[in-house]
Length: 434
Ligand SMILES: *Cc1c(COP(=O)(O)O)cnc(C)c1O
Image 1: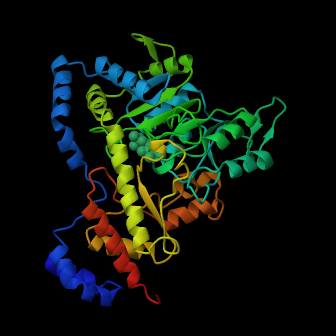
Image 2 (image 1 turned 120 degrees about the horizontal axis):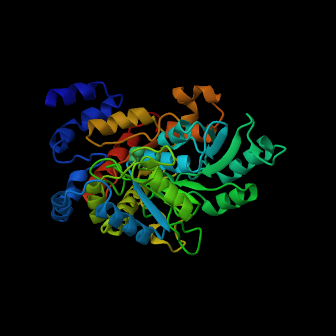
Image 3 (image 1 turned 90 degrees about the vertical axis):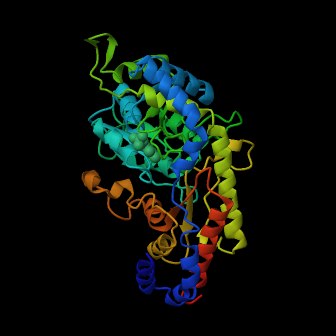
């Protein structure tokens, strides 16, 4: 371990600093570790509640849909203020089954952001429809309403039947904003565009369960603002299960019934299939565990926000904000909704230094980081057939190059945050030419 550290440091481009802090590093290496995510601590705090619930479900032997799933769906409707909620097998499947219910397919297009997790566009593609990307707002990282409107105004047109067509002749069916990193896209502005063009808003709220949109005085929850939305309970999400899980929500009762049928092979009456669906069911054990976790969500969100605040204060005090680091945008702060940001991720943007070098520097000091997302979706190999080139969506490309995700979770300690800030300060104090 020691030798490994020494070798690693010799290759460090910040050689002087590395040698200077070498002894310190050895002493602190085991004392301070800041993993990107630590799910163990959270589990320990709810282990008993979880065991009781999971044991009850096992004792009942009702593993497929049934009371556990129904009760979790009801709890979600209650929490989110959603008229209908349908538990499904993952966030990806929640999106897919929603798009299947809307009957999008070959010849159709859904407008969305390229700066998101792959599933957003992947599920659109799997229906036979095509994702059509417009760029993000560089200040917020969210789908930009201004550029979206410009695309509709200048690149799309109505055919003789009044259908909206994109430049490739695809029928534009919907707009899919993503509430990236735990705060909301500008749903007021996006709604105005959607209404003008008669398009439904389908929200990817996979990273925003519990986020409230403070741009609207009633503070609606992310995912419930448009016609439909979906969430992910992937273990690392802010409301994460013990495996895969997801949820679709919508306003329309008929659409909800259709999603319900499609998640179970398009079956409304047992063994009678009016549509071709799939097995997109939420597991009862996951529903039970998630129901327990949902009761703690507000505490965890508050704690995440508090952790983010300590980061921002720390970086500011260390003189690293502004020309060196951009702090996570909080576009809806100060408008009265506590949950305007639930800090699903804590993303900094580097205005100076080299991101990959910084990342190595942090890794060597046991600080976990991640890049969300290194390749914007319009440049993914599997979408090369869509015809995008590098430079087409420059704000997304810049965000992919310049941002870094830091550890954030409710159990992250003051000492861990301070250590991350100090390590950043050390790195930047040794920047050549500074
Ligand atoms: C996680 C995620 C998904 C997919 O959810 P899974 O449950 O992993 O299938 C979709 N969109 C975004 C933005 C996500 O972060």
